[in-house]
Length: 326
Ligand code: ADP
Ligand code: MG
Picture 1: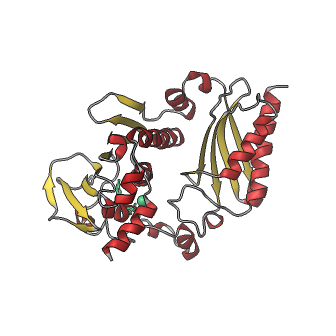
Picture 2: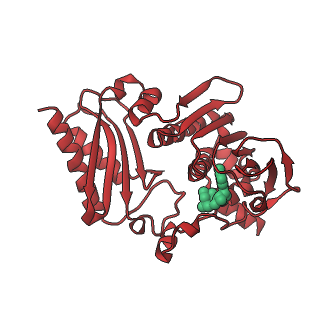
Picture 3: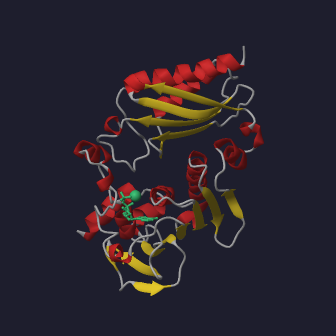
């Protein structure tokens, strides 16, 4: 059974940035306004996230890494919605099966913080009271230490760090009210965005001024498709060999080859050959129409009414580019 759990966990968490994404979403769910991430060896050796969110109650610490343990279902009274959210309470459990996981946490009302270490979903030793700030610090060490095949396929800490930068950069742009810090252990800070910043300011911090000064906001409401779109795209003055596409669907960073292709096809009319734009899109869709069968930790997302929705996105971007360049 242990082996089965480990294999399942290795499918969900394919690389350090997948684990980090889950941990960031937990911090955001806990209403954190500041998140500090520290990494060693591309997250393979050490991945720590510190937030100033609600914290975890000491009585919940015992079960927090068991599968399907979640505090988030009570928000969804509609059973159908619970189903479409599907896999809940799996992130910490999965990580604890393939890494050494330690939680240090304090709620606002607790007298002290508590520290707990986990292995294979269970507490490794009794929970210890200790000193600590309000919020939660989660430390993931030796990721994939017991998944030999995975460890071998992830040879480059630098490449893993690039993925981590993408995830932190993406979430900090999408959640510009939250301060994000990313650094390698004992080294200089690579990303630092302040609290209560703005989307454009964070694009400037992370991607530079050349992109930030070309940014234009787009917005679209399409009630019949239960679609609402917000975003920022570069104007045609900016183009780059390697474009950037940041796509959030219902506040999760995801990828969609079809949206990517559609956006590229719009820009192809305006940009030189092989040049790309910077595009940040935040789509809100009826959760019932998203990802019904695809595991949420899989990067590539699927949703209903894809063709109609993509047409709307294309014409929204197209009309913005036209109106600004005529
Ligand atoms: P889910 O997010 O689907 O509930 P997870 O395995 O990601 O499942 O987390 C399990 C539970 O642990 C959460 O429901 C939440 O109660 C608690 N938790 C995890 N991370 C944090 C955090 N940073 N701050 C507060 N609570 C957290
Ligand atoms: Mg979670």
